[in-house]
Amino acid sequence: MVGDGHVEKRPKDKKKRTKKKRGGGKKKMTAEQSLAFNSVTEWVYLDQSHSSSSSEDDFEVHQILNRAVDNNVVFELHSHSNFSDGYLSPSKLVERAHCNGVKVLALTDHDTMSGIPEAIETARRFGMKIIPGVEISTIFCQRGSESEEPVHILAYYSSCGPSKYEELENFLANIRDGRFLRAKDMILKLNKLKLPLKWEHVAKIAGKGVAPGRLHVARAMVEAGHVENLKQAFARYLYDGGPAYSTGSEPLAEVAVQLIHRTGGLAVLAHPWALKNPAAIIRKLKDVGLHGLEVYRSDGKLVAYSDLADTYDLLKLGGSDYHGRGGHGESELGSVKLPVLVLNDFLKVARPIWCGAIKEILESYADEPSDSNLSHITRYGRGKVLKRNYPFNCGKGLVDECLSLWLTNEERQSAEFEAIKLKLSHVSINQG
Image (tube, rainbow, N blue to C red; front, top):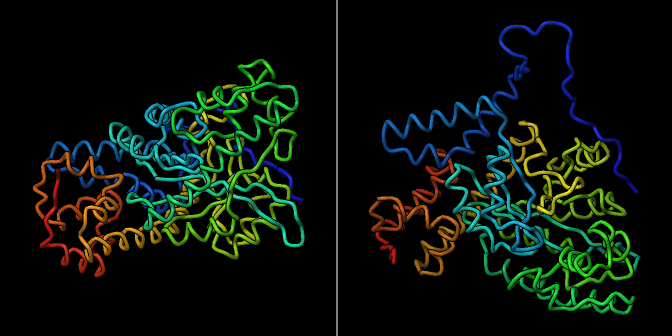
């Protein structure tokens, strides 16, 4: 078993007796870091650069880019809203991330992507980019063993979302249905432990239509006075295998990773330090297409998991896993400072996958220009595109604008995309 391992912490600033040199104390980037930074910032600010249509707009874009050079480009790749078990709405989550200097936010609610449109709409006000994501609840069964271990897989998608949206949504809906049954079973177990709790109480905390999780049950336990805080609820009753723990209808981890692949996403193992046998799980998931694992936390890089990532040639990522519950035990949004080389590696793997997914969605619309297929293109971008003063009387114009939010000129001008746009040049768009 690999434990938390040694944490390679970020060095803290120390007061120096020697006088600082003129020009500041910023560490100069290496040539490799500088190239990586330019590549990352180009992608981060694509929508700003493409949206400028006047000299004034150009000036504003340059100002944004100049500010990016002076500051770190902060990616927050693991966060939750009240569409699952977070405390904040997607809008409030985005606002908080912006205040913390986050430029790119992945909203990764448990088993749902319903909060993404609201997050994107709010992010536009702050010049932020949203990566549509989801944290999928799964189980892992070790060969030759009857025991199951819960495993969470993060999926990151392009601006158009999954290339096979209905397939992924049906998959997630089945997990969410299981979460309702699971929560009811946990309540039943707590009642048998002489800790009376009502389903209505948990459902009210979760919110209308939200599939309840352990955190909602824990909050109800605190409010009912059964435990002092959330940590105690988990430590005594709700931990994996605990007296009130229950499973739902979670799929096998391998199946989830394969589905993420099939729907144009990037698959990353969440918080591997919480697993009993991470090495075996990582090895198995790598075989079916896992792209990376979380290695970085707010307190630094976990060396043991960094080594595992090296062993299996996986991306090293991380995020705060922010829920907004407060307290000293929770990492703040944007507190995981991923190095620019890590961000560049992430985008080098993700962008071709996302580009392929966008191409697949556009091809479906070109072959069958239905309202249903159009919604796949504009699911997370229609509001912004249609608010602009562009006369979208054909599919080509709309596609150009949608692509400009996510792909570079070089990517958009590939032969494949040019062929799709040619097909769409006579397709009328109903903007009603």
